[in-house]
Image (cartoon, rainbow, N blue to C red; front, side):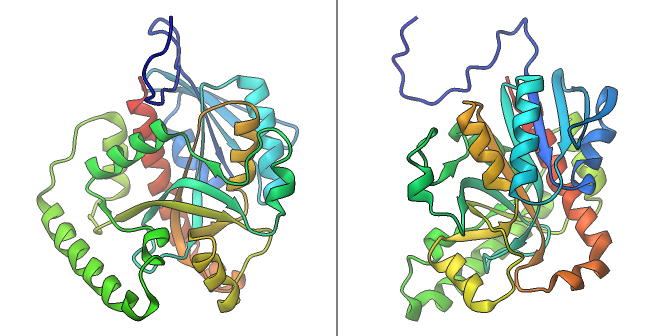
Length: 304
């Protein structure tokens, strides 16, 4: 059949087949909620990757834990893709915030993922011939729809914020905060859809906190950056809305393997905090990891 539409599609299996989904996380806390809600769950570990397989919302779901860093993420991504041949591949987890309009618990939908310390022009000479690694537009749209349906208010990404002249940026941010505060207040009466994933999300969010999200850039670094100058360069030059240490490597492998990819990150802290300071924030980090995992399950639920 000749494809005449330019609208991106996922090419998911026929209705008689089961959609296969792999969700990769760096840390056990990021995978915990997903594991808890898999039916017929089986746990295993191979090649230093611990993973659980099962079913959620009629999809065959595998959730894996890679460990931290780009090498661990790439190795785990390749193993899980080879082993389970997914139709879609997600990365779900926590990150440090770079966007002034986002707070702890807010979510970044990774429209693009970028390496920070890599000569991307050179690696783009090899398959998949990319310097920047995008999430699949259909999956991005599903994530946006899921977040709006859960009452999240959308804020501008840093690509838009940094297009505003520096002299006008503070006023622009203030106007956006006022707009979003109004939307959050209106969301108090927001009626949530009823589904398994939404019920899971509600259980993790018993008191609505006025969440926000943006669709923007996830920067991946080999360093846990705290230097203000480095972080400002990450914002201003690469337009990063959050920073972490794995995502782009998983995206790179997914693109090499031609598997549709989506990255979702929840902010556990603001970039600039020392790594040692995060040791006192275990509860907060686990809560934000569970929040974004619930959103990932909502996206899985809407795949058809």
